Structure formats: structure tokens, C-alpha cells
Length: 178
Image 1 (cartoon, rainbow, N blue to C red):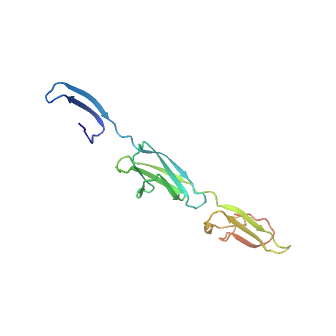
Image 2 (cartoon, rainbow, N blue to C red):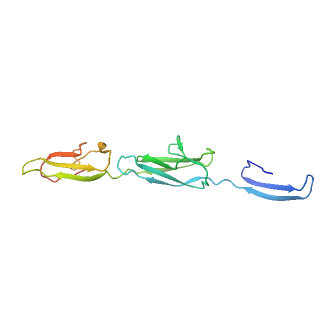
Image 3 (cartoon, rainbow, N blue to C red):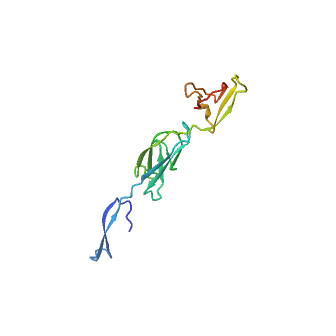
């Protein structure tokens, strides 16, 4: 005989060879609680640039035992992938649950994705003034990031800023590019 849907616990199983027989074999069996699925660790990859959206979080589990798991970064929308991509810097709460029993095997952890520290400066092109006393020098700041439209640039130690990455009509001098 098969007994289904038993809760965790200790059971006494008795077997007899025929109805009314006093020849009974008894065994005690234990059904253990399922090991709870839990988040073993979270790995954050910070965005490369300041303000960019290329950060990610990877969720690693313990006791998953090939059970289908769902993951959420906001507790509202669930996915089957353990990787969250296209993230900005910020604090995130990662939730997991069993896909087949959303009330069992739940866990959550917080993680911080740090702001990227690289502004993407690739090179600085300099054109010296064409002649003594002529202020036609030029500095062009070259970035390796595509979203340079959100950047601001300075050549006077941050006293003034502009959206354009090129500074024209410069006199001979030492400039601090930011």
C-alpha cells in the first residue's frame, strides 16, 4: 500500500499476513521536513560607469535539489532566471520561492550594487595655440562610453562645467581636466 500526502513526522507501520492474523510486523519510519531552499549568497557586479545601467546580481542557492525556483527583485514580478541584469547602483531585496508551492521555501536577502567609479575617460586630444599670443588652442576629451550626453566637463579644476567635451580658443596654460 502507498500512503500519500503525509506530513513530516514519525509513523508506525504495521503489516500482517491476512485479516485477523496476530502475526504482525511493526516498523517505525520517519518522514523528515524538506530542507528549506535558501539563498546561500548574492554576487553583485557594479555598473562600470557612474550612472550606468550595466550592473547585475546573481543569486546562489543551497538545498534547491533541482526544484523549480522563482526569483524577484521587487516582490511583485517573478522570473526563473537567477540573474538580474541592467541594474543601476542601489539597494535591492532579492526574494526566492518554490515555483510549485509559493508558500514554501521562501527566503530574501538585501544587497547593495555600488556606483561605478569609472567615468570612461579614454584620451585627451590637445592642440597647442598656433602662434605666440594667439588663443586658438583646443582640448577635446574622448570618452569610451556611449552615453556621454549626460556628462559634464571642466578644465579649470571644477570651477565651471559644460556639456560639450571640446574646449576651444584656449591660451597657453596648464589645464586640469575633470
